[in-house]
Length: 121
Image 1: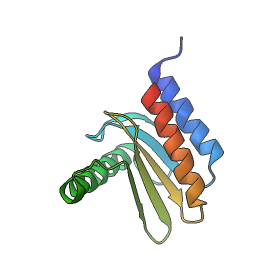
Image 2: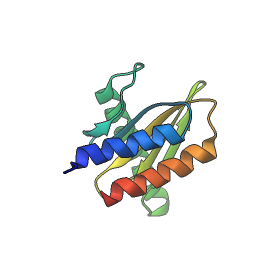
Image 3: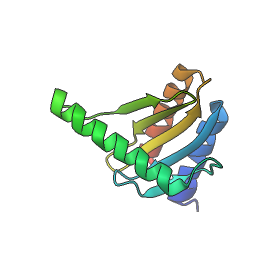
Image 4: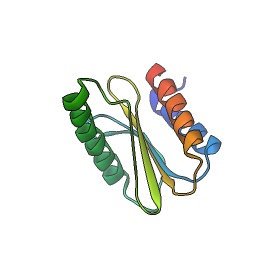
């Protein structure tokens, strides 16, 4: 029998294999607790999860205040990296860290599809 953790890791693996230049991925709770994550040589898993969840929470508060709606996707970028965070159900978010030279449309489409898979697990 396959566990939820294994299904989460499979979803992350499929996302990484279908999308180039992904550095790290994680499924985390809104509080930043890791449900599943891939290895990254560039940062600590717990730090990635905690900061990703905190950024999504703050952006969600802003969206709620400005529009009265929930946030579904958050994208932010630096000189060399892009972070895409997607709501993945009532209790989870998907965080994707990529390099700068990605096809953003492909990353967003695949991240949304993966979030839907996660929601169904």
